[in-house]
Length: 256
Image (cartoon, rainbow, N blue to C red; front, side, top):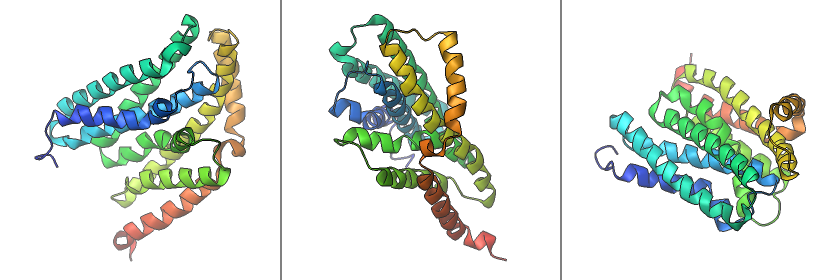
């Protein structure tokens, strides 16, 4: 892989990965100023930037340069994609500023997660990719007309989490990484529901000030404890499947 992959391919693959993650907003453009799009914007940009960051793994032998090139590809694609997605709907400068800030922060976080997962030790892969993984159901929901049934969301969530977790295990000790991964994924699902509420207030003309954020910290805590927000069937299915697959993968290590 490292010998056949040219360095100039890294930013192109990273940009393509970002495009895939943000594809729902590109193929079915919706006004970014609509309140629900605040949560979708976070989901799409986090997943997109993480996919772009993973492209740095094409040249693990040139870690620093590969990370810089992947970052350049993600930033370029994000700039063009967000400009296209905002379109004529971005008429309110205050709202647009808030949404650009959300997109920038989420893109940086996703890119950092992708880079850490692709260039860091294997044990980092699950914690870094858990949050982007829970965005997969919302990604597909944005691609298809109508709303996905909860059973499909549970299945997609389980498949995404199992893929991340199983590909992160090489040794038995790597299973420890599931704990922070589970917490980060749970927090991401909670955050998306809270962002919808913040988006409604932004649409109504309220600015994102300290008072608004502090009140939503309380709301975040309340939503954190509501199982229905997190699609518990999907998490339970992911846990059972992951344990079974990892036990099979480590069968020689676990054998007495």
